[in-house]
Structures are given as structure tokens and as C-alpha cells.
Length: 225
Image (cartoon, rainbow, N blue to C red):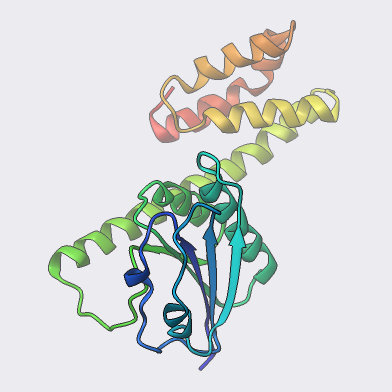
């Protein structure tokens, strides 16, 4: 059985020492990263010793609005990229629900297991019926996001081919593709694309007519034009 490395990224502005108690159950395959500012509460040495054999790192960041959140999320992205295809699990320890949006976004880009917990809790628990429904809902949402991501990749490819075949330069090809993909899946898809093309190009109608057949095709698939 392959060993899974688990990374705990702790938002120490948002949890207390009691939330970090883990009864010496962490081991050498657990990695602790504590993010704090100079204004944060000091951590008792007994709390740190409870991390047992796990690898521990402390990250002191500037005490500014949302500074800790941004540093933690940036480091999470760094770890995911660094570990690449290795089997790893990432746990954000925080009571801040704003992290959930970032986790959903990262699930679209990566197959990594990323969760948020309000504390470090390694006690096995039987999921309640409510928790089971929550897990099913999350899995359904992630599956939907993955499908949308795949469609965006296909859309990007088709737009780039069409704009390239029309003789436009690479900078225009990339820009037009990014505009179309950005608005895909939203209400008024085609109108929003046309309006943004108008802001960027004097010959926007020619550009739009180049990609219009593809936009219509993808609009039919989602029912959002």
C-alpha cells in the first residue's frame, strides 16, 4: 500500500491552541505548516510537542488584511505543483469558510485531495446521514466542475484554431480565446464575448464572426446564449 503524505496548513489567526491538539497521532508522513503574524498568540511548547514525529515549519507573514490567507493559499499551490503526481493530501486548518471557494477552484485544476478542517482531528468517525449527503453533494459539484473544465479546454482549442486559420497573429489568437473561455457557461455568453471584443479591437465584428459558429455550438450545449 502506497504511503500518502499529508500536509496541514494551519491558519493560526483563525484557530486556537486547543484546535491543534492531536494526541501524538501524527507521524513522519505528516507535515505541519503554521502560518501566523507577529500579532498572533504564542504557541505553547507542549502544543508543538504534540505534533510528535511530524515535520514542522513556521511561516511568519506580514500582519496585513488577508495577508495570511494569501500566503497560505499561495504556498498550497506551490506544494501541489512541487509534489506533482505524488499521492498527497492537503488539509487547511481554519474556521474561515472563504477557503472553500479556493479549494473548489483547485479541484478544477488538480486531482489532489484538498479539504478544510476546523481543527486537527485524527479520530476516525462514522459519517452521519447528513455528512453523507454533504459528501455526495460535494462530489457531484466537483464532477460538474471537472466536466466544465474539460469543455473549456476543448473550447479554447477550437477558438485558437479558428482564429489562427483566419490569419490573425498569436497575440490576438491567445487574447480572443481567453475572452471566449472566460465567459463560457455564463448567462449572455455570446453578448458578453462580443462586448469585450468591442473593447479590445476596432474590427471586433470580423473577429466575432470568426468565432461565432463555435460560440453558437457551445451555447446550444449549455442552453446559455
